[in-house]
View: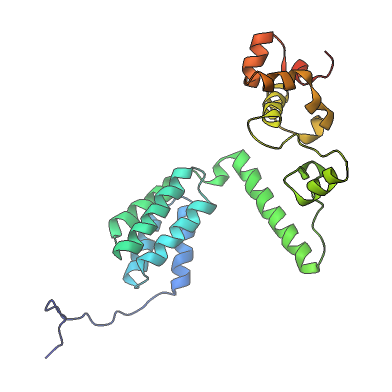
Length: 232
């Protein structure tokens, strides 16, 4: 007589395996990457029938969402589903919906800006890893990094030297400086300003009056360029 479990069910005979599990994982990732929903669904069900744990598949969906998808909601959806499946053990519908969402989600290759950032990310990663492998220092820390919150900055200030505080803090002087610099240039580029720019009388007055940079510019009818200027 066949053995039964606590619920009276007869355990199924061990299923035959037709595929390498790593091949199926690769199939799922690549079909989601190119947005082929039908193949991705097929790949998912092959993985499930091959006995790959849903938690493993869900973790791969999180990895894919963080690497390929542009919108933050894709990662949130995948991560929440992973946490849920870890808790309940399995939930095929949730797994399927997340996978379909990721198939349809915008990928980094669909945006020129995101594509450039992806290429840059991989390039910097490989150059940095290669330098460490060779025992070579990859790059020097930019001087404008060394403010009072860094070891070198503290040492410089203690020895009486000027430190760069253009980008230190958020709300006070340097925060006002960053806002004015952005209004002036449309970007924050350390090479387009000097440490001396922090000594602007307007900036000090703005901080004293507890105004935002925009409020100050409007109140006194000046431009961001004038705000950062030391010529009073």
